[in-house]
Image 1: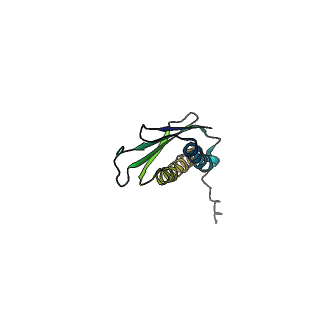
Image 2: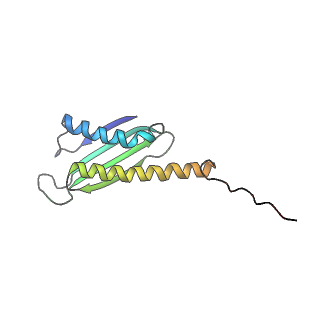
Image 3: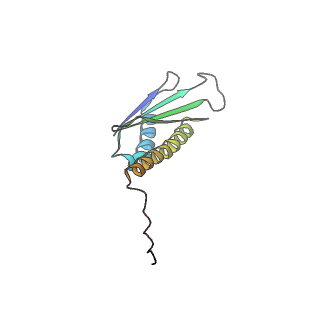
Length: 119
C-alpha cells in the first residue's frame, strides 16, 4: 500500500508532518491493507494565512483494487484533528463498503438452521 501526502501552498510538508500523518494512516489502514493499492491524503488550510475556526481540512482517498475510490474529509482547528476525523470517517466507510461486498457474495451473512418440520 502506497501512502501519498499532498499539501497546499499554505501548509509546509516538512518531514515530521509527513511522518506523523503517514503513521496515523498506516496504523488505521492496516486491516484493509490487502484491499488497498494507494491512500492519498490532501491537507489544506481553507483560510490561508488568516486564522479561523475549523479552517484545516483533510481529505483522504483510499484506492482499492478493482473498485472505485472511497474518500472522506474532515475540517478542524488543527491538522492532527482533521486527519484523525477524516481517518475515522474513512475507516467506517471502508467497513461498510467491504461488508456490503461480502454480503452480496454471501460470505458474511450467517444462515439460520432450518427448524425441523413436524408431521
